[in-house]
Length: 367
Image (cartoon, rainbow, N blue to C red; front, side, top):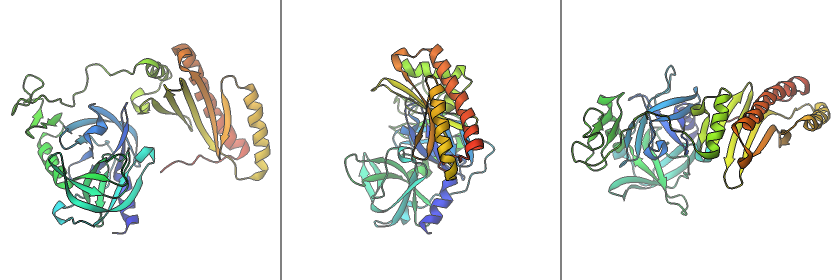
C-alpha cells in the first residue's frame, strides 16, 4: 500500500492523549473497540483527555494497564464511528521490511515517518522488540507501527536517547495477547501483573493491592475518591479557569499548559517556572490577503494597543495574537480572573472585528 494511502487510512484512527504530566499518542482498534497506547503515557492515572479528527477533546477512562509490556487500553469516544484498522502478523515480518510510524511528536499532530525494520527481534528486558530506523520522538509513544500492507505490526514504545534513529516498537503479538486477555473483563479496571502476567481485577485483587497469583504489589487504574489538584501557581491558574466556567480536565494539554476556546479564538496558557511568568496567548485570525486592508489594519492595531491595559496585540508572521503576561509571585485568584476574563472577552471581540472590518482570514490549524 502506498505510504500516502497508509497515512490517509490511519489519520482518523490516531488519538491524541494528554495528562497533567505529558502527552502521547494512541490508536483505535475496532476489533476490540479500545484505544491502545503505552502505559507510561497514561502515567498511573485512571482518566485522561483524548482528541481525534472525528471528535472533540473529551475524557476517557483507562481500563487496563500493563507495566511489563508498557501497554494501556482506554475507552473510545461514544457516538463516533472510527475507522477499522487491522492488526498484522508478527510472524510475517523480516529485517529490512518498510514501515511507517505515526504519532504526535513534540505536539506536531499526525506526523508520519518512514523507515525499515533494522531487526525484527531485538531482545530487551526479556521481551522482543522491533528495532526500526524510522524517526520517533517524545509524543510518538503509543502510536502504531504500520507495515507496507497497512496493518499494525507494533506499538511505538521508546528510543535510545542521544542515538540517531534507534527506535523500538512492541510487536503486535504481545498486543493481541493483552487484548484477548482483557476482552472478557471489558469495562472493569484491570492490570496485568508484571511478575506472573496474571490479570488482576477488582474482584480478585488480594488485600486491595496484591496479585492473587504471586503476591506482587500491583495498582489498578482506579478513579481517585478525590480529584487530583495541581499545586502552586498551576493550582491558581486552574482555580481561575474554573471560576471562568472552563472545564479544567479538558483544558489541560500537558505539564503547566492549558488550552481553552472563547468564541472563535483559541487561547493557550503556559506557566514556565524557570522564568517565573504565566503567559496567555489568544490566537486570533491571520493577516488579510487584500493588500489595501494592511495599512488600516496596522493603524487599528496600534490604536487598540494604546487603549489596552495589561494586554498586547501583536503580529507573529501572519498570525494576529492577543497576549497577557503575569508574574507568578504577583498572581492571585482575583487578579488572574480579572486578567484572563479580559483576555477571553477581548479575544472573541477582536477576532470578529478583524474578520468583519479588515478581511482577516481564519487562522490555519492542523487538521
